[in-house]
Length: 418
Image 1 (tube, rainbow, N blue to C red):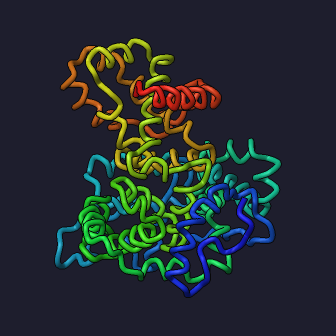
Image 2 (cartoon, helix red, strand yellow):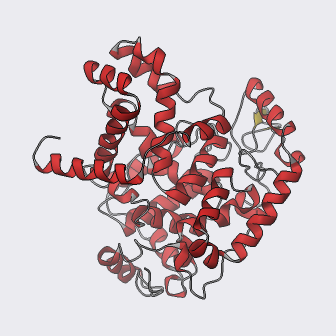
């Protein structure tokens, strides 16, 4: 547990902060929202969901089951630069992503189906739960889990994610005041790393109005957070996939909140993203093995077909794990998946993966190697988020099984079999 001390060095002393961080990187690894002691709970703020301020073209993000006001999620016709006189008007959804007319029609149908009274009831429940978070997270974890599975109300999601991750403890720690700015402003000596980050900025959310412009709000936000993390953790630095994780957090939090959320996701015991991104991608290979073992149990015919053809998870599941499905799904589905992931950990990622393969199993069984590789790039297309989540919770396996598969992987690795 975090002891509430400054794990990153003295405020204002950048070199000390970074050097201390290298040796204490895992001091906050076990930080958990349930460890809150006399730390103020972050207050839900509609502004958290649109971190670019009042001039944003974004309406507050919504989850699949939540919306405060139907009028606030109307997809709008806007210019990507905010200047309709200079650029062609574009249809933009409630998250800021450019959509076509067909998707616009789907959004409108979804909005018309929103049950406002149910949304209001859930907001009241979340307000009470966040006000009593320490007690809820310790004594009523099953209730927190259940409400996350139903979808966090959009107006509470930014604060709720920070509570679930536990990052608000570091964010509000007086000892860490100024650390983020220090890390953000410190130069990265590795020019190659800086170039890699710069090249990936326009590749992250290229259809989002705030990420399209070089040097614009979205790309600047990404650069700052990724730059700061590269300084605090030079072993990992930056790896493709991290930008999508930061981008997803960005839609719900301020810049500094996003940094601390990323830091805790990377090092927290529940998530351990750092083990996936660090040189050699050790955790990624373990995740591949666990997925294969789940397929052998739950989708034996497809597993055997893939094995015969040599279709390894590296061909189709790398993006799923490395971006936590941000790269693949529409953003409404991403929010639902992340609500559960941040609450429960990796099981939902495996469950979604199994569901995607199960839904297309018959078609995949009839395909050749080349056809499968092509088909798995679009398995998520056309999937309804509500139905996907419902089916995912019907995928039955125990956490103990995943842990056993992980031990098997470590054993086979030591024996040189993987």
